[in-house]
Length: 246
Image (tube, rainbow, N blue to C red):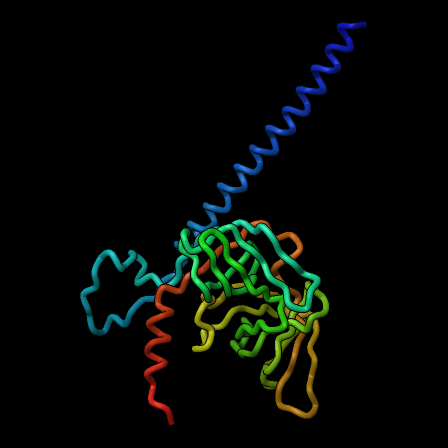
């Protein structure tokens, strides 16, 4: 009898130990996958920009990757706090200035874009989520490349609103929406997933369409994200600031 009880207790302890060991093993595996995904993002052709080869200019080899001049760099970060039910939602990441984070860095998740960094401390950063009434992202339809403004109406966290799309765009339910490459979209690499069209909203008094977009990102379950640095952002901003006023 005592032996049976002892075996039962031992088995229970062993099971709990195995569960704990499995939990930490799973966390370690997830961390490894996140780091590997960041490495793969850094290798994507969209992270590079090939210069015009008509005129050959010598570039320091330290500034050049084999695929072209690097424009975007990705680094992983852990989500430590977030909200989805407020009118203006924010996300806190456990990665800050000491780890290379800067304001205006774009933030993407495993399935789509998330938001933009607005505040940075030594070891943390604060992200304005797409689920924020102050957020505005320039987006495009994958089919036809029509561009418009992506915003949140403060209602359902699973849906966003894409507006200012020309009525000449032959939009269909299920069409894919991506980040665009227009001049005011400086932080996000072009062609990143945003979501799909689930409803088309015509405006009789204007020449534009609005549409409801099912967000590719599930903001309820974000655990890890990728910070995206546009390495040519400051150069572009500086040049545009010097443009003569009309």
